[in-house]
Image 1 (cartoon, one colour):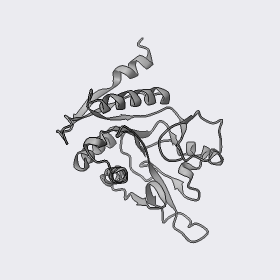
Image 2 (cartoon, rainbow, N blue to C red):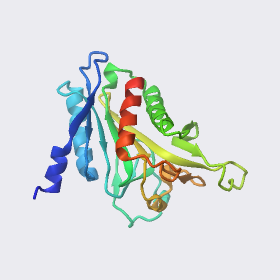
Image 3 (cartoon, one colour):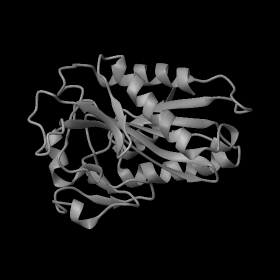
Image 4 (cartoon, rainbow, N blue to C red):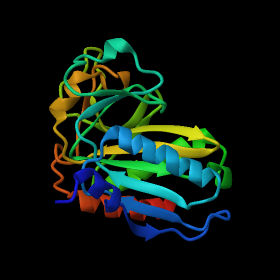
Length: 239
């Protein structure tokens, strides 16, 4: 029987390519069909980002899932970790606060050479947000960005408003990146059909009052493969 960790290492496969952009030969796409341990994913990302920076390998978008875990970004507040013993907690150099990763959530780690594309980090984050919004739109979901909150949000008028009368909104996608030598890593996560109770152990991204949702929670029965196809299509339009 093949060791699962070895199988994960062999499981990355190219599923699409991009034409040349600013001298970059192409963007490679890869997918892992088994949950990838977080530390292993981080090591792979850092290694690939270094190779991209030295122009040894093409850029990469890696689609995967993780086992249940929490990650803490550079702005994480200790009081936002409500159940520290529920799942493993990993400190990470990406921007943002606490977030959850687990089965049923599509993660896209985006390793792009911004030195060959744009050295405007704010614009890059905005394009990542639009990538998520456009992808959700293919399933009839209206995702929106908020100036005072990171991630992508969905309005929930059917829920009771906040005490100040504000409409409740649920977060459906998270965004957090890190740059090294103008190569990005980390990326986005979209809730397809995760166990939403797993978010109860944190204040997601430090935002209290609002909740979390998923495609399934909103009545969309898309498969992970459906989401992957939409991500690839919308990436090509934007990048």
